[in-house]
Length: 187
Image (cartoon, rainbow, N blue to C red; front, side, top):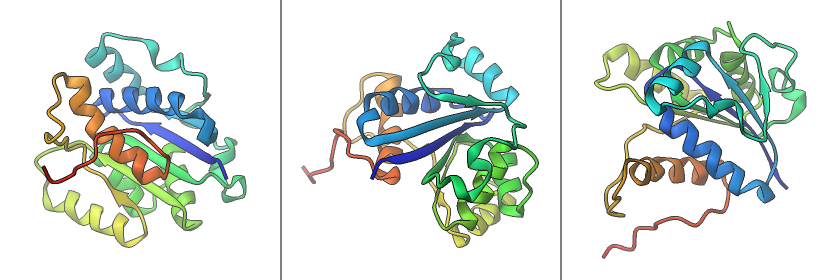
């Protein structure tokens, strides 16, 4: 069965993760039924600032406004399998942990948790304070997955994009898609 995936992009630093995830999902479309994208206003600004690029709206996926509560994934009956928040700001994580559905991103997270489906939060901030850690624990206890945007180095990445892809490949694995990527072999 093909996946239905929501990619929610917040204004946390780390737009490269969102861009590379969308690029990768585009390559893996044969495994995907649908990709829906929702971005905060800050996400669009950070994308432009960090990537010197306005291409966030150019992917062949369906886009939804941040306050479009008529979006299909605002209800569990639409049966979206996975919500990925990438990068996930600590403010968004806190609202999700508290059950505050004040925009489409937090509503999508709330829905996927209540339906016992997959929520992946790609937390980017560092260092963490105790509130962040407790919010992460709350989301984890509710069934969410915290996937820190912490790249790995054992693949010997040569560029920023290759380094960021080490995180994106983990996200793809967590979603459950087949993906050709570096695998640790212990050598």
